[in-house]
Image 1 (cartoon, helix red, strand yellow):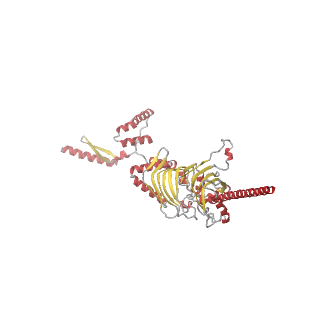
Image 2 (cartoon, one colour):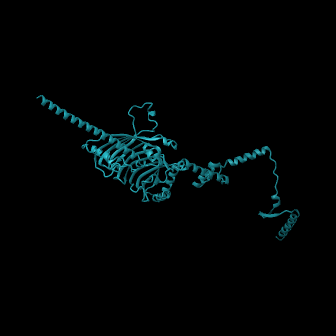
Image 3 (cartoon, helix red, strand yellow):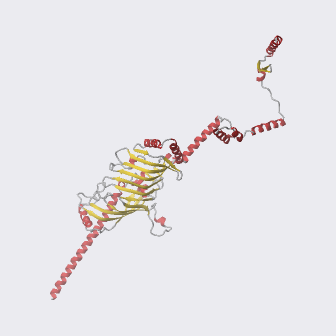
Length: 509
């Protein structure tokens, strides 16, 4: 042992001396089988020139490389996976880049951009579907009461004049591609102006990113079912348009449907109106052209104080001919409105315009001919007119002598008391069950005067109707007076003739 140790020491000293001479750096690596192994770091760090391969050797190397990579397949990786998530990761990476390795920075940014752009395209092209899935996920994760409260607060932040409560979950209706809100309650917060207290069994709607981009509201189509409640109009200011109360006159709807609904309208000057809507369908609803769009409705049916009314496209009396389309120009369509006999007091006829009426009923048949107005067109509106033909039938009218003369909403006098007295005598001359002759007339209204108008009262159409009613009534009064005068003349002539006959016969005798 002493000899081996001395040999080893001498070997180390000789090796180190040689390394110093040759500037080698020797490192003791490992001990294999009691032998010391040293490595020259300077030699290993030097770049070594590789031998030039021949074509045959290159072919062999490439063939061996392909055979080794061909062994790494998706099936082999799936067999080695020990969990569902790992197998999902293998399938996803293999579908994206045909390999199973970590993503680099370029690939991560590409995937992130693709996800963001696809979601943006999804929101733009399928807004309703996007929000349907969003609401469906929220209803699945959280309690429906909490989702309803959060949605109500979000909507009220944009419309502080309303109080909105969602009592049930939001259910997307996949068949029609609509979002269905169940059991919604809507009421107004401000105690001035129009007061609303409404409940909805169901509100179905679709959303449109394009409309929202054009500042026309995000809601595109609306279907309402089971509407009930009250609409209080007693605090409305007559000096300001009712459309301004809404505050978003630029909003539009592509379609509106209301079924199985009933509301009570409380008014200033008349009894409350009980309006029931069986079916209402409108193809276009614009806040600033609400009355004109109502006259262009596809179909409206319901009751007013238990009196049936309908509003639909008028059927032509003759068979369809090729020139019928030209005959109806320049009007878009002719809409027939019919109201069964209804109490005149309930619809507000006993007012300043007809302050001499006390009771009775009226039946209304009207044909409205709104002009064709292209969407988004506002030029030449002053040359377009709304034409309406009315036929009114009064039943069982009772009158009184008023203390003031009838006047229009502007305060202008319609008729004097001297002209009113014959009218009252004519109406009172009709016995019970005897009706007045029907009143037929036409009114014409400029379309540009219907902008930002939502009711007949605001449009001054009631003033035009009242004026035409008085004109027609006075015509009947004149005809009645002529008839009565002719009867008196005939009676006087008969009396005189009979007296002359008697006198002549007496003279002959």
